[in-house]
Image 1 (cartoon, rainbow, N blue to C red):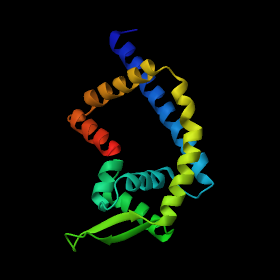
Image 2 (image 1 turned 30 degrees about the vertical axis):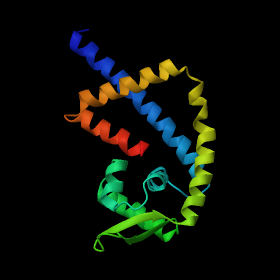
Image 3 (image 1 turned 90 degrees about the vertical axis):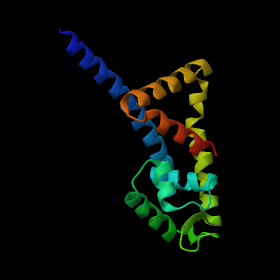
Image 4 (image 1 turned 90 degrees about the horizontal axis):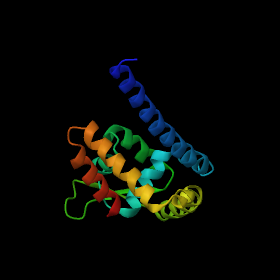
Length: 161
């Protein structure tokens, strides 16, 4: 087997592992949120708005790493469900901002409680190993995207605010 073929197989093995973890996380979300009629992206939108109220649609889409048109559909469904309210920006009346309604906050608490119950076992993995995995993820992002570090820093800042 050539070096190139070995490299190809190794990359395939790594990508398959990442996909398997992603799929497992998705199904953990989906199984829990199915009872509450929420999708993973809807939960993500609610979680972002819970931490960062009064942001616009494009900022919400950027933080969630989805397109504005996709996020627009998510926001429409969450608004119809009574979980999100659209309002005017207090300093720029032309701009729309999004906030959670009391129903949105209630559903967030329920989903978060269920979600934490599902994912808390991850913390049974030794902290050093978790830090190593996170560091490897950062390195992969930096190597696979031209501006990976900028995206990574923005993503880290957005989720901790």
